[in-house]
Image (cartoon, rainbow, N blue to C red; front, side):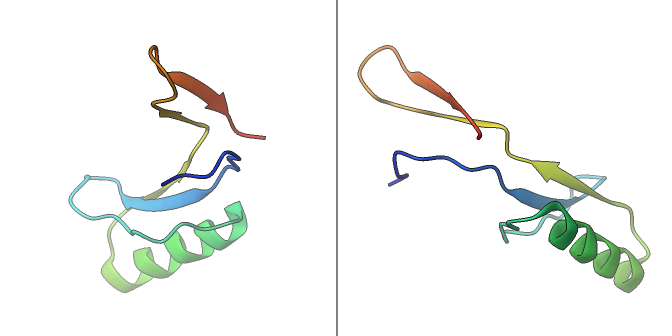
Length: 68
């Protein structure tokens, strides 16, 4: 279950959407490094995604929380 605090994180996904990493990177530079490594390994194009918000059930209605 998610905690009450939410900090942004980064993930890497292949641009065609057929593959993505399940690793959450704490920094943009770590995610960029991983995207570059995967690109060089596979010859495919990768993108870096940033989590900017989450939604969870609090009490109805749902509650949004932006990243710090």
